[in-house]
Image (cartoon, one colour):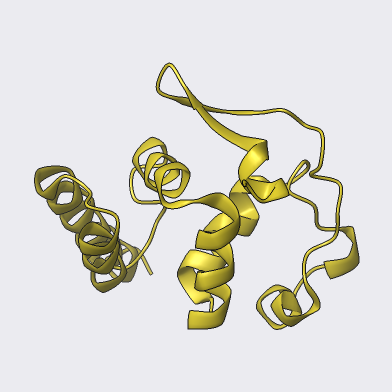
Length: 126
């Protein structure tokens, strides 16, 4: 049986698409600490799926990551990362997801190089 969130994400012809039937529900209260800078009660997957997924992947606790994987499913999470070219994650985070989600090594290596070069470019631009 799929969770309501995983029903929202389906793999079809290589794209994640939405049934838009459940996603107005609020997020679990324990995730609020990761969204300290915005109105948590207004966050829904139907409105901000990329923001929520990216934030949890970047700063979420292991409990938050377990919740995201349980709700989304690894296949949808893998596809989301591929569609967002690593989603701005740090190299160590990318390597973790490479192993956990069986992401293609060459693709992750490209994301790692890109993330590393952006870090240095940002420092030089200041």
